Image (tube, rainbow, N blue to C red; front, side, top):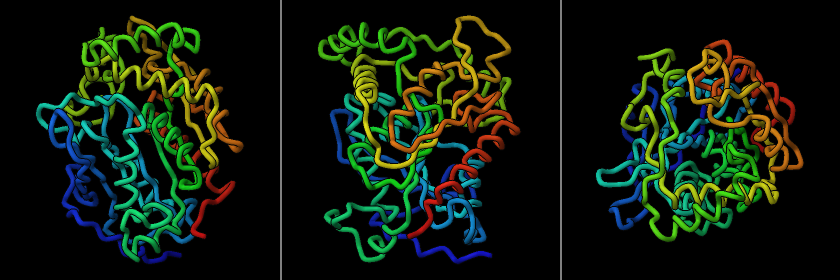
Length: 351
């Protein structure tokens, strides 16, 4: 049984073909300018050729907004296809100074406060038809009508942290959060974060753009890139092999976010967190890195995620990478099955 998709909300900008090819379109979201020039975000939408959605899919009638992590952008067609097959409309957001949104002369990924991404997220939601509840952002009638569609936020790593903080500041906007290895705590634990935070905070004030030592040895790229041991093709300028340069002001923003989560927040919606079953954090290559999280301490993240909401669940996926959806095909399928089962448990369908 299928149903026709509702008309897409109108936008003052123009949707155009995306780099992912047929079935994907992108929309530039102007955000003004800063001292590095024009600032934009980019919204990507999946438009399957059949233009239909399953009426009884696990996410039927919902809209999904995906936000990527650090040194990253959206490049996973299979993730979009999963949600479309589940009955949802799928959108992905390349935040300012990442991926499709990165402009010449800009510092990749740089921001001094994660709350500044509210503008990126709000612009994306308005284009999706999920404008401010009171209509104060000037949304038209078609957009207001589609506000009845449940909103599922899907975030990876730093994107999971950013969306969790956004949801806590905007309770009631999201019907559910699905977090893919969210970066909710510093790798050196709470004690390490609290010891490091004053130093990084001082550096953020004195020299916010100073380059910090690069601790990325390229092992994660080895597990993901098709050119090495992985399965994925992507733009290596938008997703560098050893990550973007880290700066004190950016790291300070992340540490402040970690401290906020540690003090407990309430995102006001059910949360599902997907994590690898184990972590492998070390300075030498080990074959176990191809089937574990080599970025975060997953046990600590599991503990943190249960503090985000009164209704929370954690799915530990054996063999998963840091980005669970970039793992080997059988592992990805296990992750998608976990989401489907969870969605069916509380059904955030159209009201």
